[in-house]
Image (cartoon, rainbow, N blue to C red; front, side):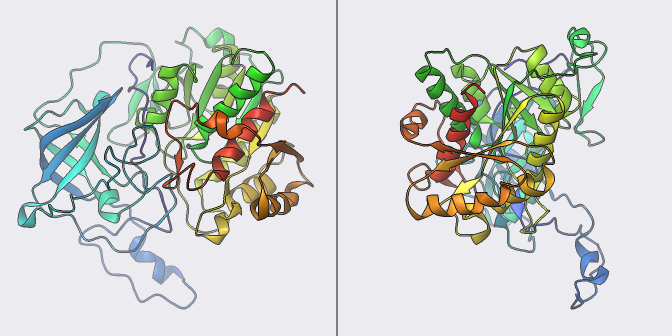
Length: 457
């Protein structure tokens, strides 16, 4: 995947941000203890957790696990034990695990990213997996001392629950050559990246975007989880083939609700390498795509007017943040995405987050994330795709989706043969730790959205 001059690289899976439901950072060392929580959950009960916290560790690289564009995963022997971090995470990310071979969130061996089961390290510290964004921090080699952030690993979070390499003190990367671009992503953090925005004045595409204001009916599929991306594309490609059409140009527009570095998405890397995705546009604080955009709006316009998209899929990067509350989840951005597509004259196609196996009632059938984002936040009308799933689950999905009928157009789409389309995916399909065999519904729902987007209106 290409990178704008001065930008960090793009393409793989696993978020460095906390991706959990109900988890919050522990208070820094030395913080005063909170007053006992009041029965009303008032300010006193909130005080202890209100400061941001980073748990730091030093360690030494024992071996290299694997590389992919922009990322190196290594095993590191820590110089001290992992911190004790309070609370239990109700994982909300795409999967409990580390950085998947295909964007699913698992480690190479399917194991947790934390200490090896047989190696706690004693007083020296455990052996852990850590991820380095090589264009930001350099490339760690065996024997290098590294500085790590381990908060998410210690907390046992989902997709983002691994150690992150913050610096390789003895192997700092060389200064990049002078290049245009003054957009700053991950702003005001120590690892902020300066990139060339597709829409800024120094960009060759600036002239095409300066007055751009219309998507001209471009179909845009909006999805909650990153894991929906390959399934949407599978449905799109299958329907286009049925119509005797080539797949056309497909662009993934990545929002900043999950991982900020596009490089962490191994799914995007695999889809890009296989030709299923022609370009990645990173918007907002997300960075590392083929094109960088300030907002979702300019990202959509760039997909149309600069990259020539026939289909756009909008979804957050790997990882998902949720709190078990009606409004506290990163997927609320789906509603805002529908609004953006509509105001720009595109064709918003809403993909429902569906599950037949999630143990949490709020995500069984149609997730409350979809019902809130599309039912309360999306003020513009969208084509909401309701997959015709068999049995009781299909009945439940149709009944739940009916709540959206007052605001949107509900479109029931057959899922026949979509299992065959999903089987052609060049990357493994997995969401919330489950593959197609464990829970086919989320993938069939996303593929149905792709199938519907391929039909002419």
